[in-house]
Amino acid sequence: MEFVKGHGTENDFVVLPDLDDQLDLTVARVQALCDRQRGLGADGVLRVVRTSGESGGKWFMDYRNADGSIAEMCGNGLRVFARYLVDAGHQAQGEFVVGTRAGDRTVVTHPDGSVTNYMGPARVTGTSIAAVDGHGIGGFAVDVGNPHLACVTEEPVEDFDLTVPPGFDPVMFPHGVNVELVNVIGQDALRMRVHERGVGETRSCGTGTVAAVASWLAGQGRTTGSATVDVLGGQVSVTIEPTTSTLTGPAVLVARGELDKSWWDALV
Ligand SMILES: N[C@@H](CCC[C@H](N)C(=O)O)C(=O)O
Image (cartoon, rainbow, N blue to C red):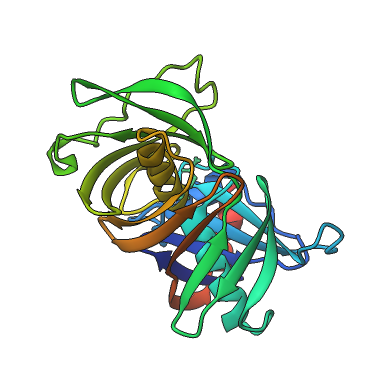
């Protein structure tokens, strides 16, 4: 069984081409693939499925977090997914549509290896408080297809311990939440760290960067704007409009190979 390893701003993924939707991708298999000692190591798995295209796209991105849980959407993963499709010859360079659990998303691959995702609306749904490292930090709840609590703070984001999962309001976020800590570092320039639901601290989160920019704008009473977001693994650019948002950043394919069949079969 073929795999490809890739990352977007060091948020890393195992890509599993499964064009005919045959794989039994159990929680145990996702956990083992993502384990950095007993597997390949990754923040998540992207299963590539070919679809009928009835709703526009020919592809479905089946995204799983490293703990085996299913998430609706993954922004960095979508760029890597698009790059894989072009690299494998399944899609021409340029614009195409990928289905996700959050709906269809248009992507545009660029010759320099970067990808622009049309991420849909970033909906600010309220305010809440994240308990991080003994601090209560206020932020905005932002729905980017998946749930975020993006908190702009004056405390340097480097100073927080994200090895412990942040606390959050389970009534507001009944299915868990991704928590972003955000500093303003210049004009239209943010820095972000993130604790991802189902993973832990990662070096980047694409949907999280969109939520961070939406939260920063909401704090100024704005619904439109653009910013760069520095993450531990690099930089992305985000534009927010009232009805849509875009995320542009790198997508890197690192390796390809074959999974050992007996290893895979022993996992249930
Ligand atoms: N890293 C992703 C987000 C992955 C899903 C997230 N952990 C969740 O459970 O919602 C991204 O780049 O957006």
